[in-house]
Image 1 (cartoon, one colour):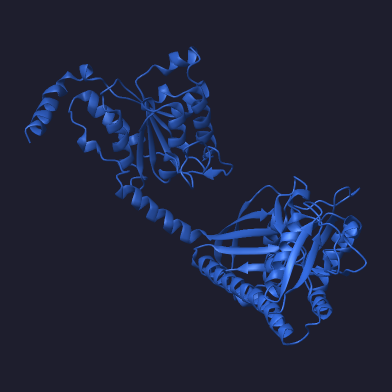
Image 2: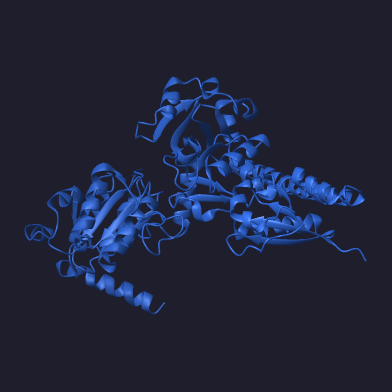
Length: 530
């Protein structure tokens, strides 16, 4: 039985020894016995008549005492670990990456190898311990030297220990005198590794194509036009809705400069002016009225713009209002539901009907149980907003924070427990209709300030949000308190009081209309035994 010939591998670090030993074992292990050592762990005593492979010329001095003149020493040429190259190929062209290794020479050799192999689309920034000056990048690439990467780096791509290249493998076979049929089998194994990498890249490419197709379907399925262009002005996204707005096919737009597709100078200025804080503006494009919202993606150096067809938006708002009504956000009571024929109640109803004809804020004052919500609902149903929603909230029944989020809504992440995607507040839900704030005298000074802004500016910001949302809501408020006294005591803002009390309605107490008591008793008895 022929004894297996031996190969001794000497490396600098344990990680390098394991990686190169595994590589040699996978290619040559059936034919040769492989022993490996590293100076980081333990080196052998002086070797005699061995074929020795050094992981690099940099370790020759460290292992010199292990080598006798009878040894045949081969210094390995190293190349990148092809199994991890897909991570680099997926990075966009021109991306800055720090290449991190242990010595200046290994950094330079590795970068040269990558460029020579065609992975030349990246901007490599050298880094090694002790480098006097270096350029920082958020991405670092390293051949297994993770501990050398600066802490501030956000993303590390480990491309694994550099492997022994095919020329060194051939040199080993030649030295062993086995460039025969066995070499063919070894070559086939090496080729198989390359084919496996090709399959891996092909699969990644297939998944990327499927993802792109999926994203295209998503972009084309939304109701808004979506445009994106890079820092040079080249259009990268132009969906189907945008095709309808500009009467331009997506295939003709993508890849072109934005000025070739959009001729409206005012729109171009708006899209390109990153200094202007205004992110929304109204435009008319080819007889289509659109609201354009823009924002940037700084990391990608890309501008995104959405084009919302205002006619479609109005239709959606009408549908939303219908849905709110369907959920019960409607005024349930009418003036015909207010029982009583006394002079006081008839006079109050007549005044309320006149107040219903306006859109001004209204303050209803009356003792508990006098029917303030009954009158508020009746006024809504008598007004021009009768087809819009009617939402009522008792301000004294909720805590300050809960009432704030209920009235004004909140953005995702605004506070612990906030719903994903945020939540619309009652003011937003009451768009086009009426909101009834019962027990308004019980709200805190903080909420009084927020409510004052809504009444003054006809706009609001959600809790935790930055966007300003215009609103069209009539505010009817009610109280059983003497707000004038609260103002003197510093419990209620005078400016808010005047905003709420543009119109005023006083509901008489039952003791002031005793003649209605028989009618009320008859009504309640009838329903009690129904």
